[in-house]
Amino acid sequence: MSQESLINMECTVCHNLNYQTKKSKGKANPGAKKRLELQKFCKFCKKKTLHKETK
Image (cartoon, rainbow, N blue to C red; front, side, top):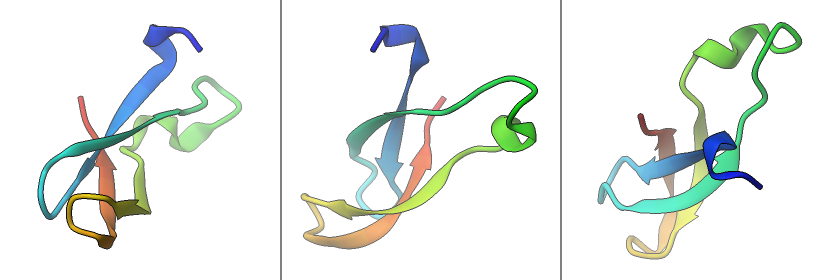
């Protein structure tokens, strides 16, 4: 994966950057302009928390 297509995911509880993922862009995905929010496991909090896309 190229560095340009990766987005960082930040834990909303401890504010650590834990994950990197790709998000589809363009006309095929009309919700691409919204920020991605996923429930992921945070290794620092040791529980499942909400992770949001950073800038």
